[in-house]
Image 1: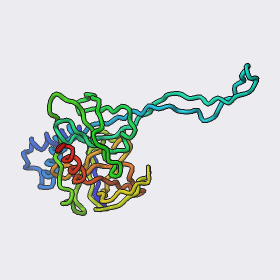
Image 2 (image 1 turned 45 degrees about the horizontal axis):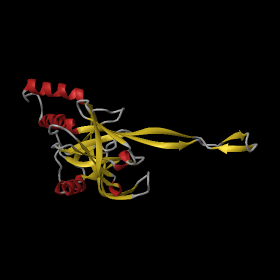
Image 3 (image 1 turned 180 degrees about the vertical axis):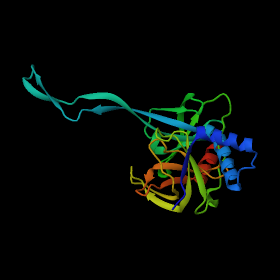
Image 4 (image 1 turned 120 degrees about the vertical axis):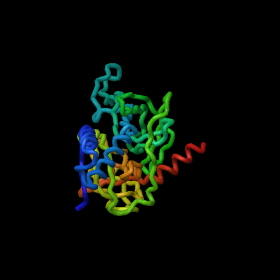
Length: 258
């Protein structure tokens, strides 16, 4: 059975404090390794953001309403329309200190407005700078006066089966919760449930994802990004899939060259 674990961020501080008080004397090597992972996650969580996309459009009523026209003395069918809006939300990761964020394309598709909520609660408007629908990737940019904390991108080609991986949830159910699991598949192909697009070379994991976790980070034990979760790609076995970090790195470098 694949390894899974979850722990709230607030509890991590307690574990670190205990570790410092005991100076490692009462902790076996496995516990110390766990503390090292906790420290890495506390350092990287500030690079995880919430993405809210607002879509504004004109919507028609499902049925036309009959109206009597006194001039023509005829009954006309009137189709009512109204302007409305709805929102999509997901996670994102800061991958460059200048304010470049990567998230899922399906979260921000057709958005009129995109707002980013940073780790400290600050809200900033964002714009799309690159959109790769086939990979379910979107790159956003926010204007900031000072450099932001960014995650390091790992070499996803070096990932192996049964590697331990970690993610920090951003859903309402598991907000700021660290979840652990293992890599259960490499180079996996999946067909999107939303638009039927086939995506290849995905990383399959044993981690459960929930609404709001889409676009969340997948870390290795060093706290480096090895993939971006695409929550639309889930199975009845509760495994999740992630876009490899090397694909993210390719498009980031292309943008920076320009």
